[in-house]
Length: 262
Image (cartoon, rainbow, N blue to C red; front, side, top):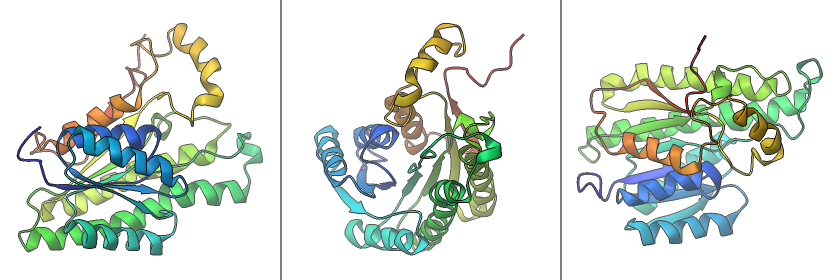
């Protein structure tokens, strides 16, 4: 545990399962107090809280909110501040895939609105609320190193014609990270993007067999799926405070998938 990080407050959206859970557990090892946000699976979020307490979090609290709704996002920030007394780290992790993969020529407005509502619109306005709170807290001397992390995807730069709305949302989220980084640098709030590749979670289970074969054929230079802990360790590296002279950075957590080789 880094004693300089212990006692700080981290909010992780979609923290009960998958990548979000992996992030929470690594932050717990740093000694952060945690708010584990969930939309529907309360039991999973509460289990993550229990595990976080065992790993080193002084406090861990599950809070329900649908982050696609800006009003609920603002409430989530307010509840975090009221319950924990501060907010030092926001991890924008919650996201959804299309309910059905369709060719880009058949993408429906309903799927577009759903995916971009959760993955981009909601994240933007939640970040707006959290960033405003962080600026105020820092001005009052109540947070000396506030940070925001966007969990995007290799799909922000790799086109998948069967899930265009997801790729477009993630590409937009990558730019949102840049915009917030530029705006908040002078306020002392660092913003980073963590860009996972193929991570083995519930979301990727339907395509696991297909990608097992592609990974075996050399798609991923490191030759394996990523894990939620791989992503969690990247977020923990940011949260540790060791990237003090960095903002707007992109961490590619993809086993080398982004490399362009001949």
